[in-house]
Picture 1 (cartoon, one colour):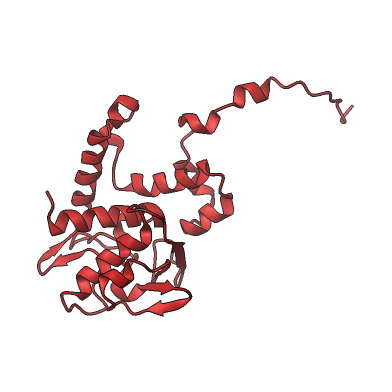
Picture 2 (spheres, one colour):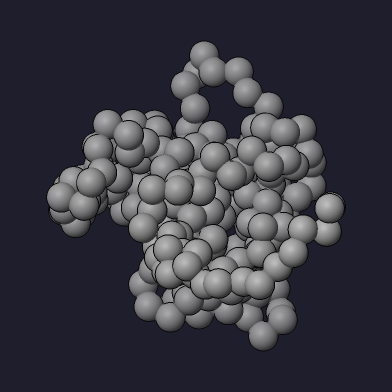
Length: 219
């Protein structure tokens, strides 16, 4: 349904994919949850156009034409503080800048303070993990991912962080860049790079048959 909650959930899914976010960084956690991670707030977002900073209270039509956006992290799961993640705008609707612009404009348009989390929809309503999972599952069904070998039970909120890392890897991004964007301090991020993805091994068998002349330097 085309509701404020669904639109907010869809934008947060887009943001989570591009910024490789953990669910606690963009969705409202359970009241009983105890975590070091601080959810992104309006005050943590900086839009720029031609190098100039746009105020978050700028009208939506102006935020939508920003050419870049930066997320400033107050705290995160690994204990690091003050990390920043930056993305430039993409042509078309699937864009991290436009998704954040809609979230910020929606919240500021309700005269909420800058400390308001991005999950805020309206008074008494926030996007939570269950909303993210439900919409991702619906997208998987609509795009017939099941026919391509995916199990819906294995598609969860963390799939967005994993798919962002996979997208970077498949496009040839350097490992250090993936680690920086995902705020990984070790090689644990490699668990997200699924070897069963056919694109990763395309052409490997042919390359393995190339003959090399060599000798054993240890003898």
